[in-house]
Image (cartoon, rainbow, N blue to C red; front, side, top):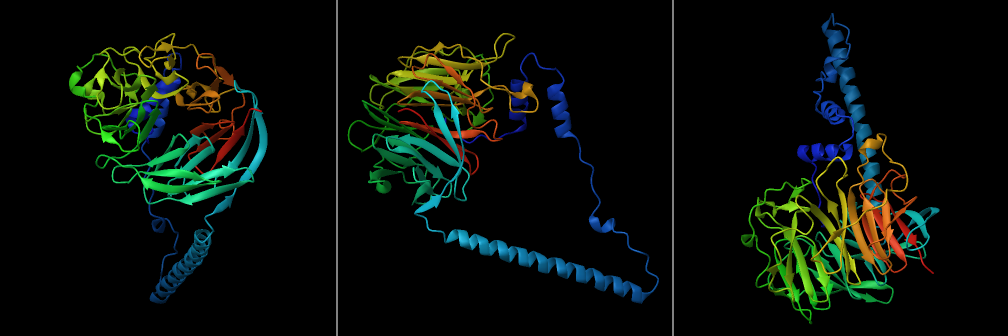
Length: 457
């Protein structure tokens, strides 16, 4: 799912317990919580700590007052000079031409993978934004910055740019075009390729206002969702609101507890449609089995809904094919096969991490994954929980990342290879956005840094 997660005390406790695992020292979490929760000693204001000789005469008191005023004036002048210099530099950045920007290439490294050797170059991403969404297209990867700029890297070492309308945008490939969608109130639109650049096309023809946070394209048409409602198009580019979308009224409360406390996307039971799957027969949507969990992301104990065209959705079963208490974070498919990542309840012989594969989106098989290649980048190895965070699919196959910067690659979705030396963990940053395009991979971290990998003939 594409959601920004807020870290609260409950999530912190859950993360510590997950990473520590069942065999970790029992007092680790208690030590961390105790150190975080320790009450800071209040510090006295600085002016109460300045050692000022006692005044003996009014003249001496006046001298001390004049000296203090002089110090304050000098500090103010220094701050004004520094602020003016910063403002001048910001203005210089604002008037920088927006047609292209240089990339700073770093050392070249090579990573073995199921796709063959991947040659990586690190780069510093230009721009002032830090929240990026990356997507793969037939022409290579594109990235959307939170400052409403579309960017795409080219071989000559520059980032081409296109200014977008105001909005919180994400990009979704649809054949040779791209749908750019955002939150409710942001008017989604098409992007078209023209030569070596992208141009803004017409607005999406929607059936009433709706945000677009996910797009799914298949032989039966296109499905859009904002997480709570669905619109579909069966041939042309006119979208219609689903007549019978998945509904929690068809479900009953469950007794299982979700393995992961997710982030809330609304009120309890308000509604949340999880990852969707495209098949030759139509579309599959995953939702929580318990109506009370429909506001949780990732999806807890997912059940399967099916639609042949995106309009009417039928519940396949009230039992989850992923098992009691399991959760699913993301699903990626290609060539009729689908890979899901998530987790199951912890036990003494199960780390809780899970990868499933399916050829129809209804029946799912949990895979046995190889151990990650490399050592934990954190100072305390016990904190490496290797929780899977991203999965993407492309012409070459699949890539899975975990929250510690390790990666796995596969060409068929069933046999996985742990990638040694994957960029990210050793460099002190974790890639959060990932795109797989024909012959290339782009990763962007939560900051102005990323990598480009090239593979194949």
